[in-house]
Image (cartoon, rainbow, N blue to C red):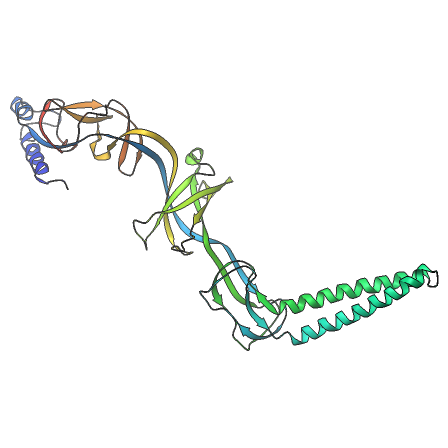
Length: 349
């Protein structure tokens, strides 16, 4: 932790520098001598070498991309219930059963008629080969078998529909039916939400669009778990602009296999769109903006030397220095307020 007394000293010296009679931008000769002659306590650090990312920040709600209602395909009484809200299910898992007795009997009846027609066709095939049956009669029997087969398949399908299965894998987010309830065809029985992969729609201003492309990674945080980073990736960017707000829509997938996140959470995204490898980096508090120039104060032989620098990426309170600073130079990070080129300083880490 930084000590507070250097700042108090700087404030006191600033007050001395602002004596009555000194206008803005000027100082008396006595003040000049005081500024140069009296060492100012400052805190210093060395720049570091590290990778730095240019990031874009956006906020949005995360949603589920896989969300499906489970509907009754056939009417009937719900006689068995196997899952409850919150249960995790796999695709095809049996969730419930309707009373399928009538549908089963209809399927068996259709199966018996089909089997009889097939036997008839088999018997008449031999007669047709010997020319004892007309071709039209034989064709009629063939069509009958085809029609009865289609009827059987429909009856079998309806009977299969009395077993309610999960159309997708996920979590039962709602159960909308009770045991013993008579349900109609197309009635909603359950709702399944897959939360292993969530989706977010990010609005990107058209002025920033050139920086982004599919494949860029992102980090997101949610209010319920501050300080915890979750991974996301931009999978596509809409080619059309939203004319109401001048933005493009980027779609990001969020890896949620740990199931820490839930649909509906509000999230803050940081999207890394550019990476500079092994960059020279200083804390943002070391940067001084004055006279329309960006500078840093370095300590040389007990003096603060103002150095004009060129900056690059700024991210997470860190600034990349492109030019004007060497790796082994001490930079002032606390106490540079009121300093001028050549001011005497007492440096401490």
